[in-house]
Amino acid sequence: DGVEVGVLVFGGPKTETALDECAGHLTTTPNFETDCGMIWVTHLTPNTASVPKTMHWVSYPESTSLTSMALAQAKTELEGEGGRTDASSVVVVVTDAQPMSARMTAKAAEDLKTSARLIWVPIGPTDPGTDEVVKTWASKPWQDNIVKVGDINLLPTPDTVNAITASVCPEAM
Image (cartoon, rainbow, N blue to C red; front, top):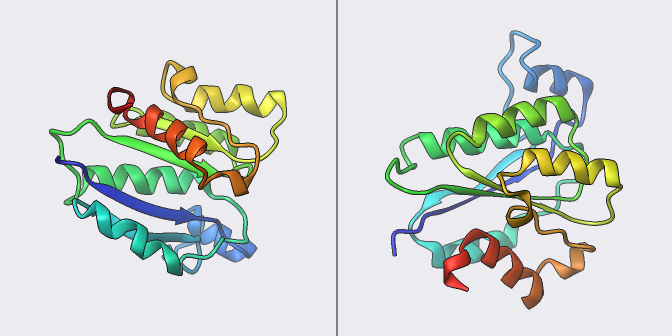
């Protein structure tokens, strides 16, 4: 069916030095996984059946949330060797945390939206101000590109999975 899937689990730096490295403020090159919290579970693969099997080793990143870097990593993945220029790309961001920098996240979201449709799945309670900001990060129309999930435990339920699937592939539902 031509579908490729990649999964990046992201957190963020746990120390101030790591933050400076990840933000490019130092001359040292960070380790994206250990310093910046960017863990590629799988890069883009047409073997979509294998993806759920790779998820068992991933643990919840108890850290900050360097969302802007995760968006940049997704764009790099789509435009790199694994990406397909002939495909309509969709990036789904599942997050339960405020990004470290709303400004940098907005910039990275705008940049990514030049290459892909951007869907947000915010988990947990959010305030109205946050909801308004997420609307600007999502592709338009935002009503089709935001799937709010009230609690992390609802994420694997059929209703939530169907809602996310319908957002990604409306013609399939």
